[in-house]
Length: 76
Image (cartoon, rainbow, N blue to C red; front, side, top):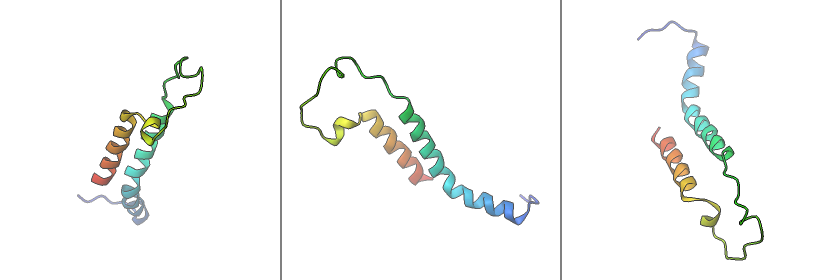
């Protein structure tokens, strides 16, 4: 397919194709982090003194979303 376009335009298009998936993945992660559920009143009433791990800070849905975006980036 022959498209008559200036060399600078083609250079910008070919350079952007590598960064575009990373930028889109970061934007989707930012959008997902904005939509947080409000904390329940029982959780806000006092301190939880149980031991914490990395899994207590993230739900399995967030981990799955992160791995899906990471897999998509690696696949592209």
